[in-house]
Image 1 (cartoon, helix red, strand yellow):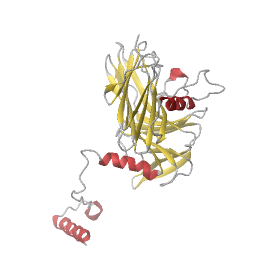
Image 2: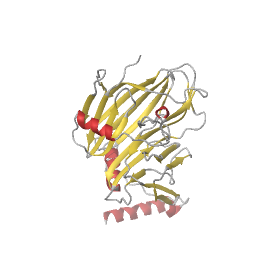
Image 3: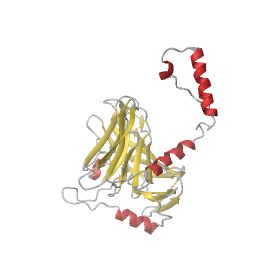
Image 4: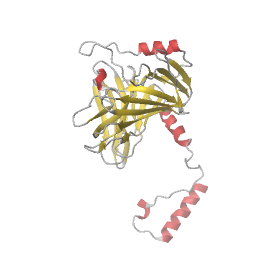
Length: 347
């Protein structure tokens, strides 16, 4: 009999709060991702968890469906499942139990029946989970950065002897009912990053990259916000799949009104076949919340500039001479162009 994680974790940074429910051995669920809630006590967290329960309705299972960050089919979730795979048709609907939680590498000690409440700033949360029947294990990592970005990924481990085929593994962040307008990008060479807006209706808005790389037609960042949001106004929730190969971004609204936004690697048939003790790790899925597009983009900018490997502001200028000389790479002509640029910069 495996142990059961039983805790609630509240992370805060730069005007953003993230409340995670990992109670009763369930996979982590995001109860709140958005504006800063301040320091929460256990009663506050419990009230938020109850208020987030979907009341359900006709044509659904009797028990309320709880949406984990890796949505599970066995719960009655009728949207896109987080993990899709099987052992030649078996174990296609795993039921995971969260056994251990760590915050910044330190185990969260829980006692049966007692919920542990943790408040923290920017931090990394790791959740171990197993399905002993399906012989699968998970490691789910959820982080909040110093700048208020949220990112998550999942590792799937085959703890059985028979091969397990991973067909899809996507991370899903919940969206509030107020978020009903989609903005992403399209385009082609010489007309890159063309914005396109549309309402989020029942069904799935799916953007796929199948070229083995990104390009001018990529969604890049998938936003969903309050209708009419602009650069400075309106709440927006956005995701980015941090993977340069085949990838997906999606926004989904099921018929009950529950909404998610997420993404993952686009896996081709037979691409991931886990042998005994093999694992598959998804790319990071980044989430940015803000009031207006500038605030959403600003979180990504601050995160990238804070990297130790980020280039110094003082660096050489690269001169693009393609249209100027095409294939006529004559040293005198190139030197003349360089001199002209120096004069422009100095002037």
